[in-house]
Length: 442
View: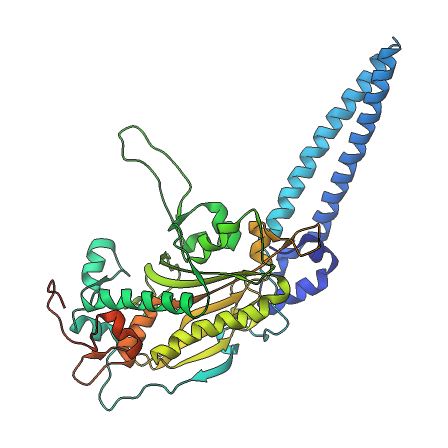
């Protein structure tokens, strides 16, 4: 959420930044009028309260002197009624202004290129050459099914469309990738591992910016206990990413970032309704309702956040490089950024089955946008007043998409798949994945 005082003092700039994002500038329509009405109401309430206090003091004095207090008592009652009415008005206007502010996306950093869509994103780096084969390459669906690693039909049978079951080497590869990523980020990059809950409350989703605007992209839990005649409603949502519970670890807290950024890495399942997705993305493992991801989250001082953003992005890139997967780094334009982001890099891995690069990590600096919504603060050395921290996060990496990228980039002419060298220890020494029999140990 943006700072109210900043918006008030820089309305033309905010409107221009929103225009660059392609956001609805009507969000700010009437802002000045609502803000002025709110401030007027608050001022009037404070004035009336001061008058009531003065009358109360006079009332006490007159009573002690044994004088008639009927007139002053009536006057005090009128002021009380007026104050309550104005307080209700001020509260209603305050709610209206707060809802308006909650709907305004973050403002893009000055280094973000202007643009309307993904076609205006800027390629900042390409690592490796797109994989080429001297045979007809297969996509991950055909490869995985032929090797007995994945089963989309059984996934659909037990859970519905866009779910998958992993067997044998497939399940082991998923686990191997997660363990490799966690070890890399904790041992070499200095992140502390955390295992958060996989369900969160509405306050948590509000803090990171998913609610209220993106409720349709989430899965909400009914939370009804199975007992005849008795039900218990609660407030639980399945997490769309570990960003939500990990960022909210410090909600309503003042933390210490004086010695550098606080950095967490978390491996969790992620659940998304994927409302609006269609076409080729609904096949295979590109866009599923449930997938696993290793997430990187940072909390830091404002002056450090853009250096930390570069570090975090580099940490995600290192995973791809150690796995030998060709990728590119894209700087998202103003029109393709997420709601809460001030600046985002997307890492896109080469996918031979589609002959294109596909997003595998999104690394964002949210500046104080999430911290203001979640009330996460720090106190600078020598300062009495606390300030909002800056928060950052990025996938390090999305495990399912890394999995499919390995299948497609490391496939061989006979249909087998080589195991990247760094994963061999995590795969129990297995160097090549070959066809397996369902239910038989590999």
